[in-house]
Length: 290
Image (cartoon, rainbow, N blue to C red; front, side):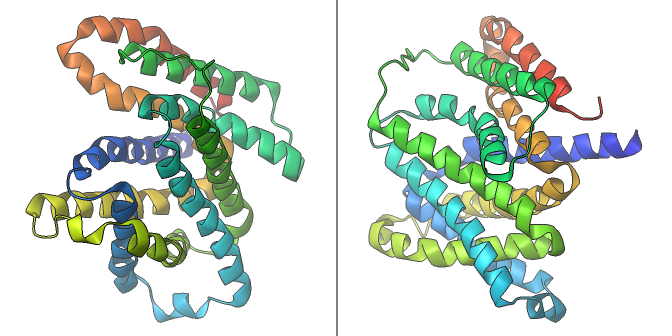
Protein backbone atom coordinates (compact mmCIF):
# COMPACT_ATOMS: atom_id res chain seq x y z
CA UNK A 1 0.00 0.00 0.00
CA UNK A 2 2.79 2.41 0.96
CA UNK A 3 4.66 1.66 -2.28
CA UNK A 4 1.51 2.28 -4.33
CA UNK A 5 0.96 5.66 -2.65
CA UNK A 6 4.58 6.66 -3.28
CA UNK A 7 4.30 5.63 -6.93
CA UNK A 8 1.07 7.59 -7.37
CA UNK A 9 2.57 10.67 -5.70
CA UNK A 10 5.65 10.46 -7.93
CA UNK A 11 3.48 10.05 -11.03
CA UNK A 12 1.42 13.06 -9.96
CA UNK A 13 4.59 15.11 -9.41
CA UNK A 14 5.89 14.12 -12.85
CA UNK A 15 2.65 14.97 -14.67
CA UNK A 16 2.31 18.26 -12.73
CA UNK A 17 5.75 19.34 -13.92
CA UNK A 18 4.81 18.26 -17.45
CA UNK A 19 1.62 20.34 -17.27
CA UNK A 20 3.53 23.38 -16.02
CA UNK A 21 5.73 23.23 -19.12
CA UNK A 22 2.69 23.87 -21.33
CA UNK A 23 1.91 27.02 -19.35
CA UNK A 24 5.44 28.36 -18.83
CA UNK A 25 6.63 27.61 -22.39
CA UNK A 26 4.02 30.04 -23.69
CA UNK A 27 5.71 32.83 -21.71
CA UNK A 28 8.97 32.17 -23.54
CA UNK A 29 7.49 32.75 -27.01
CA UNK A 30 8.06 36.57 -27.04
CA UNK A 31 11.75 36.06 -26.24
CA UNK A 32 12.78 33.14 -28.52
CA UNK A 33 11.22 30.96 -31.18
CA UNK A 34 10.25 27.36 -30.23
CA UNK A 35 13.24 25.72 -31.94
CA UNK A 36 15.71 27.98 -30.14
CA UNK A 37 14.02 27.62 -26.75
CA UNK A 38 13.92 23.81 -27.00
CA UNK A 39 17.54 23.50 -28.11
CA UNK A 40 18.71 25.91 -25.40
CA UNK A 41 16.82 23.91 -22.76
CA UNK A 42 18.61 20.72 -23.84
CA UNK A 43 22.01 22.42 -23.93
CA UNK A 44 21.59 24.15 -20.56
CA UNK A 45 20.25 20.95 -18.98
CA UNK A 46 23.29 19.03 -20.20
CA UNK A 47 25.67 21.57 -18.67
CA UNK A 48 23.80 21.71 -15.34
CA UNK A 49 23.74 17.92 -14.99
CA UNK A 50 27.52 17.42 -15.45
CA UNK A 51 28.45 18.21 -11.78
CA UNK A 52 26.06 15.51 -10.56
CA UNK A 53 27.71 12.75 -12.57
CA UNK A 54 30.61 10.85 -11.09
CA UNK A 55 33.57 9.55 -13.06
CA UNK A 56 32.34 6.00 -12.55
CA UNK A 57 29.08 6.93 -14.28
CA UNK A 58 30.84 8.34 -17.31
CA UNK A 59 33.03 5.22 -17.57
CA UNK A 60 29.86 3.14 -18.05
CA UNK A 61 29.43 4.65 -21.49
CA UNK A 62 30.17 2.23 -24.33
CA UNK A 63 29.20 1.90 -27.98
CA UNK A 64 26.13 -0.20 -27.17
CA UNK A 65 24.76 2.35 -24.69
CA UNK A 66 25.66 5.23 -27.01
CA UNK A 67 23.80 3.63 -29.92
CA UNK A 68 20.72 2.87 -27.86
CA UNK A 69 20.50 6.34 -26.35
CA UNK A 70 21.11 7.89 -29.76
CA UNK A 71 17.94 6.14 -30.95
CA UNK A 72 16.05 7.17 -27.80
CA UNK A 73 17.12 10.81 -28.23
CA UNK A 74 16.43 10.76 -31.97
CA UNK A 75 12.76 9.91 -31.48
CA UNK A 76 12.42 12.65 -28.87
CA UNK A 77 14.01 15.21 -31.22
CA UNK A 78 11.73 14.02 -34.05
CA UNK A 79 8.75 14.65 -31.79
CA UNK A 80 9.75 18.27 -31.16
CA UNK A 81 10.58 18.89 -34.81
CA UNK A 82 7.25 17.35 -35.81
CA UNK A 83 5.44 19.60 -33.33
CA UNK A 84 7.08 22.77 -34.67
CA UNK A 85 6.41 21.75 -38.27
CA UNK A 86 2.81 20.74 -37.52
CA UNK A 87 1.94 24.10 -35.96
CA UNK A 88 2.62 25.76 -39.33
CA UNK A 89 -0.53 24.17 -40.80
CA UNK A 90 -2.67 23.32 -37.76
CA UNK A 91 -3.60 24.81 -34.37
CA UNK A 92 -2.38 24.20 -30.83
CA UNK A 93 -5.87 23.04 -29.87
CA UNK A 94 -5.92 20.36 -32.55
CA UNK A 95 -2.46 19.11 -31.53
CA UNK A 96 -3.66 18.96 -27.91
CA UNK A 97 -6.54 16.70 -28.91
CA UNK A 98 -4.26 14.46 -30.99
CA UNK A 99 -1.79 14.30 -28.08
CA UNK A 100 -4.46 12.54 -25.98
CA UNK A 101 -4.05 9.56 -28.34
CA UNK A 102 -0.46 9.02 -27.12
CA UNK A 103 -1.23 6.23 -24.60
CA UNK A 104 -3.35 4.34 -27.16
CA UNK A 105 -0.53 4.70 -29.70
CA UNK A 106 1.83 3.18 -27.15
CA UNK A 107 -0.51 0.20 -26.71
CA UNK A 108 -0.63 -0.37 -30.47
CA UNK A 109 3.17 -0.19 -30.78
CA UNK A 110 3.86 -2.51 -27.83
CA UNK A 111 1.47 -5.06 -29.28
CA UNK A 112 2.76 -4.78 -32.86
CA UNK A 113 6.49 -4.62 -32.12
CA UNK A 114 6.89 -6.39 -28.78
CA UNK A 115 3.85 -8.69 -28.85
CA UNK A 116 2.81 -7.43 -25.41
CA UNK A 117 -0.94 -7.82 -24.90
CA UNK A 118 -2.67 -5.10 -22.90
CA UNK A 119 -5.58 -6.34 -20.73
CA UNK A 120 -9.05 -5.39 -21.94
CA UNK A 121 -9.66 -3.42 -18.74
CA UNK A 122 -6.66 -1.21 -19.44
CA UNK A 123 -7.66 -0.73 -23.09
CA UNK A 124 -11.09 0.41 -21.89
CA UNK A 125 -9.30 2.79 -19.50
CA UNK A 126 -7.21 4.27 -22.32
CA UNK A 127 -10.30 4.86 -24.47
CA UNK A 128 -12.18 6.47 -21.55
CA UNK A 129 -9.12 8.55 -20.64
CA UNK A 130 -8.84 9.87 -24.20
CA UNK A 131 -12.52 10.86 -24.19
CA UNK A 132 -12.18 12.48 -20.77
CA UNK A 133 -9.11 14.52 -21.73
CA UNK A 134 -10.74 15.71 -24.96
CA UNK A 135 -13.91 16.64 -23.02
CA UNK A 136 -11.88 18.83 -20.63
CA UNK A 137 -10.05 20.51 -23.52
CA UNK A 138 -13.28 21.31 -25.37
CA UNK A 139 -14.92 22.66 -22.21
CA UNK A 140 -12.25 25.35 -21.93
CA UNK A 141 -11.95 26.51 -25.51
CA UNK A 142 -14.06 28.61 -27.81
CA UNK A 143 -12.33 27.17 -30.86
CA UNK A 144 -14.56 25.12 -33.13
CA UNK A 145 -12.96 21.73 -33.47
CA UNK A 146 -13.76 19.92 -36.70
CA UNK A 147 -11.42 16.95 -36.98
CA UNK A 148 -13.22 15.84 -40.13
CA UNK A 149 -11.25 18.67 -41.77
CA UNK A 150 -7.98 16.79 -41.50
CA UNK A 151 -4.95 18.97 -42.14
CA UNK A 152 -1.35 18.30 -43.11
CA UNK A 153 -0.21 19.51 -39.69
CA UNK A 154 -2.51 16.98 -38.01
CA UNK A 155 -0.83 14.13 -39.90
CA UNK A 156 2.63 15.48 -39.05
CA UNK A 157 1.81 15.74 -35.36
CA UNK A 158 0.22 12.28 -35.31
CA UNK A 159 3.50 10.93 -36.69
CA UNK A 160 5.34 12.96 -34.04
CA UNK A 161 3.24 11.28 -31.32
CA UNK A 162 4.28 7.88 -32.69
CA UNK A 163 7.89 9.05 -32.29
CA UNK A 164 7.26 10.10 -28.70
CA UNK A 165 5.61 6.75 -27.90
CA UNK A 166 8.63 4.94 -29.37
CA UNK A 167 10.91 7.16 -27.27
CA UNK A 168 9.13 6.03 -24.09
CA UNK A 169 9.01 2.36 -25.11
CA UNK A 170 12.72 2.25 -25.99
CA UNK A 171 13.60 3.76 -22.61
CA UNK A 172 11.67 0.97 -20.91
CA UNK A 173 13.27 -1.65 -23.14
CA UNK A 174 16.90 -0.48 -23.10
CA UNK A 175 17.50 1.68 -20.02
CA UNK A 176 17.23 -1.02 -17.35
CA UNK A 177 20.96 -1.02 -16.46
CA UNK A 178 21.43 2.74 -16.37
CA UNK A 179 20.63 5.01 -13.41
CA UNK A 180 17.80 7.53 -14.02
CA UNK A 181 20.15 10.50 -13.67
CA UNK A 182 22.70 9.09 -16.10
CA UNK A 183 19.98 8.08 -18.56
CA UNK A 184 18.49 11.58 -18.47
CA UNK A 185 21.97 13.04 -19.06
CA UNK A 186 22.56 10.87 -22.13
CA UNK A 187 19.19 11.90 -23.56
CA UNK A 188 19.95 15.58 -23.00
CA UNK A 189 23.52 15.35 -24.34
CA UNK A 190 22.66 13.45 -27.51
CA UNK A 191 19.48 15.46 -28.02
CA UNK A 192 21.53 18.67 -27.77
CA UNK A 193 23.93 17.43 -30.45
CA UNK A 194 21.02 16.58 -32.76
CA UNK A 195 19.23 19.89 -32.13
CA UNK A 196 22.35 22.05 -32.55
CA UNK A 197 22.13 22.25 -36.39
CA UNK A 198 18.46 23.27 -36.15
CA UNK A 199 19.37 25.91 -33.57
CA UNK A 200 22.05 27.37 -35.83
CA UNK A 201 19.96 27.25 -39.01
CA UNK A 202 16.43 28.04 -37.77
CA UNK A 203 16.86 29.36 -34.22
CA UNK A 204 16.93 33.04 -35.29
CA UNK A 205 19.73 33.67 -32.79
CA UNK A 206 19.95 37.39 -33.51
CA UNK A 207 16.38 37.96 -32.32
CA UNK A 208 16.63 36.04 -29.03
CA UNK A 209 16.19 38.38 -26.03
CA UNK A 210 19.53 37.44 -24.46
CA UNK A 211 19.62 40.52 -22.21
CA UNK A 212 16.14 40.08 -20.74
CA UNK A 213 16.05 38.76 -17.16
CA UNK A 214 12.60 37.25 -17.70
CA UNK A 215 13.94 35.20 -20.59
CA UNK A 216 16.64 33.60 -18.44
CA UNK A 217 14.31 33.07 -15.47
CA UNK A 218 11.74 31.32 -17.65
CA UNK A 219 14.39 29.28 -19.48
CA UNK A 220 15.98 28.23 -16.17
CA UNK A 221 12.63 27.05 -14.77
CA UNK A 222 11.89 25.05 -17.93
CA UNK A 223 15.40 23.58 -17.87
CA UNK A 224 15.50 22.53 -14.20
CA UNK A 225 11.91 21.53 -13.51
CA UNK A 226 10.34 20.56 -16.84
CA UNK A 227 13.44 19.11 -18.52
CA UNK A 228 15.93 17.70 -15.98
CA UNK A 229 13.37 16.80 -13.31
CA UNK A 230 10.77 15.35 -15.69
CA UNK A 231 13.33 13.26 -17.58
CA UNK A 232 14.83 11.95 -14.35
CA UNK A 233 11.38 11.06 -13.00
CA UNK A 234 10.38 9.53 -16.33
CA UNK A 235 13.46 7.27 -16.28
CA UNK A 236 12.69 6.22 -12.72
CA UNK A 237 8.96 5.67 -13.26
CA UNK A 238 9.34 3.68 -16.46
CA UNK A 239 11.43 1.15 -14.55
CA UNK A 240 9.02 1.16 -11.61
CA UNK A 241 5.51 1.24 -13.13
CA UNK A 242 5.98 0.74 -16.89
CA UNK A 243 4.92 2.80 -19.93
CA UNK A 244 1.16 2.12 -19.70
CA UNK A 245 0.81 3.47 -16.18
CA UNK A 246 3.17 6.38 -16.89
CA UNK A 247 1.40 7.50 -20.07
CA UNK A 248 -2.04 7.10 -18.49
CA UNK A 249 -1.24 9.99 -16.16
CA UNK A 250 -0.84 12.28 -19.19
CA UNK A 251 -4.65 12.28 -19.29
CA UNK A 252 -4.45 14.60 -16.26
CA UNK A 253 -2.50 17.27 -18.17
CA UNK A 254 -5.57 19.05 -19.65
CA UNK A 255 -7.20 19.19 -16.21
CA UNK A 256 -4.03 20.45 -14.50
CA UNK A 257 -3.55 23.12 -17.17
CA UNK A 258 -7.09 24.43 -17.46
CA UNK A 259 -8.61 23.99 -13.98
CA UNK A 260 -6.77 27.05 -12.57
CA UNK A 261 -8.60 29.05 -15.25
CA UNK A 262 -11.91 27.84 -13.82
CA UNK A 263 -11.47 29.95 -10.68
CA UNK A 264 -12.80 32.90 -12.67
CA UNK A 265 -15.34 30.88 -14.67
CA UNK A 266 -17.18 28.21 -12.68
CA UNK A 267 -19.54 27.46 -15.59
CA UNK A 268 -16.59 26.07 -17.55
CA UNK A 269 -15.59 23.95 -14.55
CA UNK A 270 -19.07 22.42 -14.42
CA UNK A 271 -18.83 21.72 -18.14
CA UNK A 272 -15.46 20.03 -17.68
CA UNK A 273 -16.45 18.02 -14.58
CA UNK A 274 -17.73 14.95 -16.50
CA UNK A 275 -14.43 14.84 -18.41
CA UNK A 276 -12.45 15.07 -15.17
CA UNK A 277 -14.46 12.20 -13.68
CA UNK A 278 -13.86 10.11 -16.82
CA UNK A 279 -10.14 10.77 -16.45
CA UNK A 280 -10.07 9.45 -12.88
CA UNK A 281 -12.12 6.42 -13.95
CA UNK A 282 -9.53 5.76 -16.67
CA UNK A 283 -6.67 5.93 -14.16
CA UNK A 284 -8.53 3.47 -11.92
CA UNK A 285 -9.00 0.99 -14.76
CA UNK A 286 -5.42 1.27 -16.03
CA UNK A 287 -3.74 1.01 -12.64
CA UNK A 288 -2.63 -2.53 -11.83
CA UNK A 289 -3.02 -1.93 -8.09
CA UNK A 290 -6.24 -0.08 -7.39
